[in-house]
Length: 430
Ligand code: EPZ
Image (tube, rainbow, N blue to C red):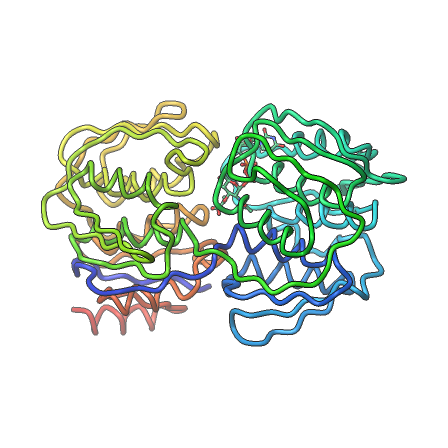
């Protein structure tokens, strides 16, 4: 089993290139099979989740050609099978996008119930409600979600919760439904807008993505396109907090600063300098960090996917901070691990009360999920001594070359897979 060995203490300094948005890529890859023409997608991050998605698409007959590490050509022309039971697909949440895409194109789909990070209950009732509003019959049998319709018809859907997944999934299905669909209380995340832009580039007619109300005029056919995925807001935010926690000076490049506003605002509040330019953001942490309060909210609020990273920073900030998680009910599992590193955090329900400490100390810990895993890496980079993190497979679901990018900023981090390699790492890093 691979682990990360980290020797903390080096401030991160330099520039880092941010890759394509994983959560946009997952939906865009699925949507690419909605045409029989060829689609070229650029800036696809090479991470486990996108690779699993492409594997599942290939399992039903999609032809995927990798042009280079981040560019793929996809053809959905030869798709025959509308049943996705692939074992791997259970591991990713975004398998539900294949449901929306196949239902939209073929009026029928059967997909294994989605898995993904264990951060809460994660129901899919809003997806199902949306498909039913489009006239589909949806049922769950033998672990599969089965959705079918004679012909999808536009409908009016009010989402009871703001859901990124359900908004995108319904948008996919409705793109080829007959007539107009209106999604109210839609999610406004940058990746919702990116998926809408992608579908529009294939000939769909989607208006209002990025606002509360999305209007979709169904079209009978989608065509091929070439499209570049937006930069990953959360990867960027993770490096920004890594700079803050290690008292560093990092410029994250190839980003859309507007998408990072809530993250930049919190970093400024806790004492960092944040400089924005056209497609880069520089974070300088020259002063000691101070406490703040934060509540995770749907976009443009502070992202739940950045909650563990800000908690790690507040754990080292002077004073008492409060972090409230309002999206997922089980997203503080990493706090036990952080406590082993010396953090002083009490979790009550969906709130973490954090008393800042002066330092973390290295420990052997496990990554409980993707973002928490990345946050624990950041804690290790700031800690005194060596930290060893297990279960880095979670981190690899969503961060491409995380260790290499951190190394390029001066971090002492290595992927190891044996006690012998750990001993070597300890000898090397002193
Ligand atoms: C997406 O998950 C992301 N995953 C998550 O990223 C992210 O944390 C989340 O959006 C919130 O931004 C992908 O894009 C693959 P939701 P999703 O539907 O779509 C409730 C990461 O680390 N809900 O917006 O599953 C749900 O329980 C991850 O990259 C329902 O009640 O999230 C939650 O409380 C992890 N019924 C809230 O809505 C539904 O049918 C928001 O969930 C759907 C959701």
